[in-house]
Every structure is written in C-alpha cells, then in structure tokens.
Length: 476
Image 1 (cartoon, helix red, strand yellow):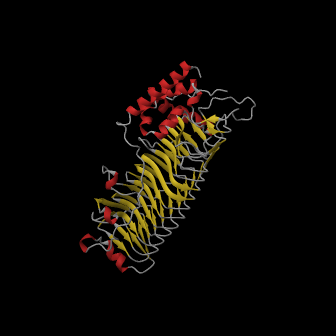
Image 2: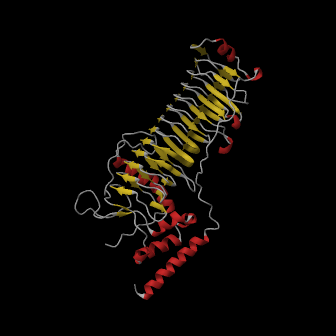
C-alpha cells in the first residue's frame, strides 16, 4: 500500500474510533435479559368467610364429578374448588374477587372452569401469586373465560395436563411490569395445552418455567414486556401464535428441542428489543415464521445446533445477532427483506452456516441463470463487527463513524474483518405460502405479494426514516 494511502487509512480508522469512544460514557448498557428462576409463593387456601362467594356453598355441597351451572349475574367473593367438578357459566356471569387473593383457587384434579368473566379488582399479592384463576392440581381445564384486573391471569402450579383455551386476559392497566404478573404463568407443569388465548397489558404474555411437552397454538400476546418469557422447558411446540408490541420481544433460555412454526414476531421495538431470542438453547427448529419490524430479528447466545429455515426476517434494524459462544447453527432458505444490517457478530468469528437464503440487499447478478448469485454474499462489514462488540456503536450507525469505516473498508481492503458469507444466496425470494402476513395473522400468503408489501410498507417506513446504509460491492 503506498505510504500516503496507509496514512489516510490509519487516520480514518482513528477518527472513527474516537467518535465511537466518545459515545461510550453517554450510552446505556445493552438491555439484555438476565432471566432469573422464580419460585412459587405460599399456596392460597380457603378464603375467609368474609371473602367467600355465595357460590362456595354450592361447591361445598357438590359431589365429585358434579356439574354446577351458574346463571347470569354478579357474584362477589373468592372461590375454592377442592373436589373434581365442572363449574359452567351461562350468560357470562361475573365473578368479582375480594381483592385480597386469587378469585378462583383450584386445588383438586379434574376440574373445569368455563364461561365466566372474572374481575380481580386490581388487588391481590404477588408474593402469593394471586390470579384470576390459580390452579395447583392436575388435568384442569379453563375455557372461554375473560379475566381482568388480576395480578396473574391464569397461574398453573404443578398443574400437569392442563388445558387453557379461548381465554382473554387483560392485566392491571397503568401499573409497571414489575408490579403485575403474567397472562398465563406455568411452573413445573408437564403436558399442557394453550389454544386460542388473547393476552395483553400484563408483565409477560406467557411465562413458562420448568415445564415440558406442551403445545402453544393460535394465541395472541401483545402490548406487554415479553410476549414469551421461557426457561428450563424442553420439547414444546409453538404454532400459529402472535407475539408483538413487546418492550423487549421474546426471550427463551436454557432449553432444548423447541419447535416454532408459522408464528409472527413483530413490532418489538426498543434499544435492545428482539423478535426471537435464544440464550443457551439447543436443537431448536424455527420454520415458516414471520419476524418483522423488530430492533433485532433473531438473537443467539451460547446456543447450538439450531436450524432456521423458510422464515421471513424483515424491516428490522439488525436481522441476526450471533455471539461467538454459539456453534453449529444453520440458516437455510430464509428471506431477509429490508433489514438495515444483515448480521451483528459479537466476537471474532462464527461457524454458523448460511446457505440458500434470499437477501434483499444483495445486488450481485446471476449470470448462469441457476437462481443463485454468482458469488457468495458477505453479511457483515467492519462497522457491523464493531457495533456488535461495542454497545454504544449502535447509536452511531447512521453518523460519521459508520460512514467513515464504510468508506475505509471500500478503499482499503486491509481493514476487512473475517467474513461471514452465504455461500449460495438466492437472487429472488422463494414462495413461502405458510408464513403469516404482517398484519392479521393469516396464512397462505404468496411471498411475492408479501415481499412487495413488506419491503414497501413496514421496511419502507423504517428505511425512509432511519436511512439504509448502502452496501458496497466487493472487489472481484
């Protein structure tokens, strides 16, 4: 390299480093989730006479296996169900709790609660896990209930083979997330099934800990902290769910063999928000999901042998964040549309395999007509590597530092980091009929139409307002 060019290269890098360093003091730390294990509180027993509902007399008088039918009206006080029976509401009867504990407390196996509106009166005790419906027994079914104003919506404590379907939970409006519980909270439970529930304005939509062999299908969790908060739970299946408008998206930790199909992870915005986060998660399969309009689309740390295929990752600031603590992960047949940055690599290198994906920012031609670019697509630049390893660099991605390093990288190839490449990138987005649409959650969408609406709609807004840094072509 001529002496003058070498001096210019050093000057450009020095200026860029100085600008990034200047932001360190003012930049907040990346808002990662440290996920801690929760322990259930003291189990609530029979409510006092002053806090009991008049319906308690009917429950106490019922024989095992009875069906108690409750007509329209308002019923004040809390209930204890301590024998197997069905409690069925007709005409949406309203159970108004005492405000001091769980409104309905299930302490016997084979109980069904169906067809009620439940009001927790913005009361209860987080230390005792007060909920609209609190279950601590096996084979419970909660169906067609609408819960409001309770700390937890539905709490399942060692409630094996529980079923919760078509329930609505609205938390205590106006409280900070730390002052309320989750929509559906699951602890140490096997074989559960959650279908068609709608959760919002709670701390987390689903909190699942130490619970396995479950099915979570067709649910909506929005306007909350995490749509899904998840630890130490293996062999669970997530299909056709919506997790959106979260303060930090979804967070899954310390788990194995999870399957995600046809879910929508969208509109999770914030300094460190993520559509789908895996920390120490192995052997996960994610296919045909839509991951769109998130601060970060997919986040991997300390995770191994995970497969991502057929997903659409779109309109996010960063499509993928990978730590070098990960290994043997694979991305194949995905479509990355309108993302500001394809990859942030935290660390020096990765063995993550990228093959046969579509990248809307890839401008290389397909001269031989085989449907793939004629050379590999490089996912990261020097500044992408820098922003992945210095938290405050993200704040400067649209300023002089980013532009300076981008220019230096083009002019002086010696600055380039170890490349991460898609070995055989597609030149056109493949059809993905099973991927849900950005709005409405429907399936069967032709990806050609989706790419247009996604790139010109959500991605267009993000790119227009924030600026998409052009990717320079590599030297041949």
